[in-house]
Image (cartoon, rainbow, N blue to C red; front, top):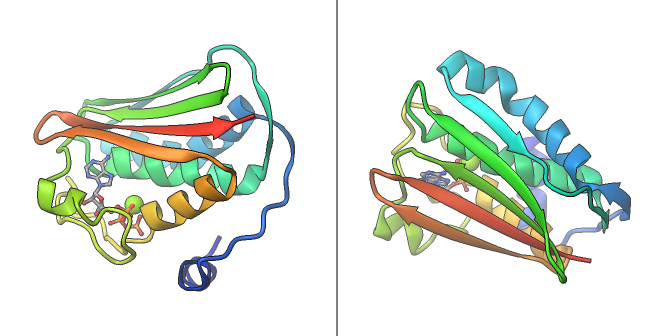
Length: 167
Ligand SMILES: Nc1ncnc2c1ncn2[C@@H]1O[C@H](COP(=O)(O)OP(=O)(O)OP(=O)(O)O)[C@@H](O)[C@H]1O
Ligand SMILES: [Mg+2]
């Protein structure tokens, strides 16, 4: 999705989903492939633990975008030599996707407005640019699927995002 389209979606707050039965692990793999070269360049290993195969009615391209956004954030806030781990788990309600890094963590002041468009910290570890749309668009996509996003973070220790997607 290009920047202009993302901006238009954020401002309208509306998103049309094109859902089809989707193997979630394949969407994650495709999202990871987008970020892989950036990660390698920065010396960060991406590890994917796919768990039990799970098919859900998803807009695959949009879920890929969520994966790209979360993993890109994890890479941008990690230090060289670190690992970013993406896991998938199935539960009775659906799927849990998690993205864990051991990077900077998120400051409480940033945490308070995390999903607001165009806000963010200046804590990227290699001075990557910060538009401040990644999480806002991700939340919109996840909620359009009936899902929700949660974050656990500790300054200086890292961040774990969890995305719950219902069946
Ligand atoms: N994994 C993470 N570790 C530390 N801080 C994070 C992490 N993910 C998000 N953040 C914080 O949340 C802010 C908002 O993230 P978001 O993805 O919405 O915007 P961005 O990364 O700054 O810009 P964009 O994604 O549009 O390029 C980031 O600027 C950063 O301060
Ligand atoms: Mg981002």
